[in-house]
Image (cartoon, rainbow, N blue to C red):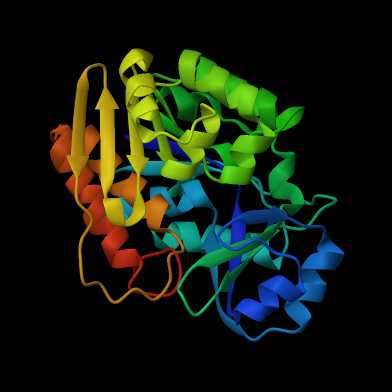
Length: 309
């Protein structure tokens, strides 16, 4: 197997809202907020659902990799409930091997409310449910060892059982890649993420905000210097400014595509990672891999949701 993703198994519930909905509910645009089940239901009660789809950041990347013809798998915790079944069916439809046997859990399958404002930005409210309870016993060691690379998400990292699952996966992997996931996520776990980036990972994906926060700077030149000293492969997406990959002293840049009809930015980073990793594992150059990532993210932002049909 080429890549095994390990992440939060979340069902995405997509709704269009006005900016006032965010301010009325004290939500910060373009970030992800963790909510409990009652808050999730309260928010959803005032909204019209556009689409419900199997999601989760890394699962979106893995589905993208599968669509590009790569043999991939996924580990993520769901409950044996209606949404859990939908989640599994969604992965199978994408030809992703699912290395998890669902069973009855105390908490329901995780759900993420994706709120799309008129400017196409997405703001997420996530009820992790049982997804956030992933533990080391949920990690299939054979699946980890039999894949060329594992791909983890920062969203998954949390003290206790998820951290143990994370550590077990990295320790047994041939190569480990990770997405920093979200600015708030980085700020919550900064020392741990910095340690992972410096000592445990081979490939790191971040957007500009996340990497600036991680190293406590506002100057992108300092990010370049940090990346050169890091000695790993650091890939940064910069929105309209394109993307950049840093590996030792090599800095490769790629422009973003212009004049796109942007509908929804959900999944832009996930599909960028899918395109880049597709290039990387199929021996394309760093530049070609960045271009493939840009192509995939350009496609996804011109449609609703985080999965290409």
